[in-house]
Image 1 (spheres, rainbow, N blue to C red):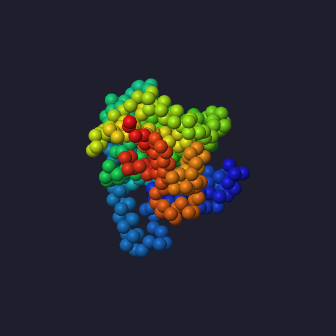
Image 2 (image 1 turned 90 degrees about the vertical axis):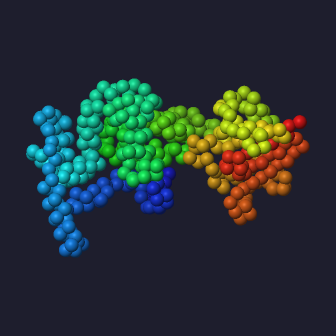
Image 3 (image 1 turned 90 degrees about the horizontal axis):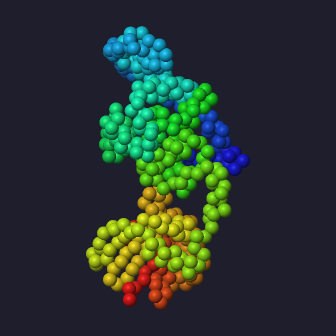
Length: 406
């Protein structure tokens, strides 16, 4: 990777939705140390040079209060083995009943250990798998019904409901999708579903990176990976959350390379033949009736057009039939940028020639200045009209072929 990007590192902050540029090689990013915030958490109750006397007094008071509050724990059954070791770490090594302070410090230390030692996370995962027992085994049988199977298990709620309830936001209807998705990925692994093989070298940070790869691949047509854990967990979540990204191995990707970027529509005859075939042979899903009495359908199976459009709407009215090609709703890149619009326009010009306003190939600078927000092209012929631009019916960038009804 370094031979391709050098030390140019572009980072996207999914929550704040902005990108930043850094000088860092791939290895530097991958080997980045544990965030200093963990050390700050571990030393939270220790006075620092920046604290004034009120902060110092507050820390001492809070520490004393948490230390006086004990948690009653029955640990007779945890006399040996990994379970006892993990519980002891939760309780910060405290014999007898731990205090809130013990648990706070224990969790902070355990979190830091998970980031630096894969065995810590592995042991915690084993503890959870052992506790859930046969219920978890049943859920693993059919991973693609996991959402509903979750409700019949110990959790008593669907997988989606469980994830939403686990994200710490007050309004559960406004859970940030970035947190929702990456937590979904981690929970799958924590439950031992397509779990990663972690150890002293393969650490928890690797799992975090895989979750991010799976998340950002939702913005792409294809996720290329030979990592079985990443592949399987992504397949489960893509199925559950209606993501259209295809998952392929490196070998499968090599076989696809020859077809990527090749025009799917070579001339107008080929294009109209595809449209006619899809309209006649695809199963139609009724979407509704328009004010003028026209009916709208969505075709269930269709070809891909111009290497971009993968959804097909059919509007049938008394006066005309409209064939509307757009990007599917399940794609996170459903609206193309100007460069992508330009490529589609250029392919249309190659097939149909200049548009009705005698405009030819796309010019990035002038088109943006002229159109400001929306690009639109029209080709008018004797029997049909072709529009390329934003369509009011679906509010998407679409290719619309209008044929009057005779």
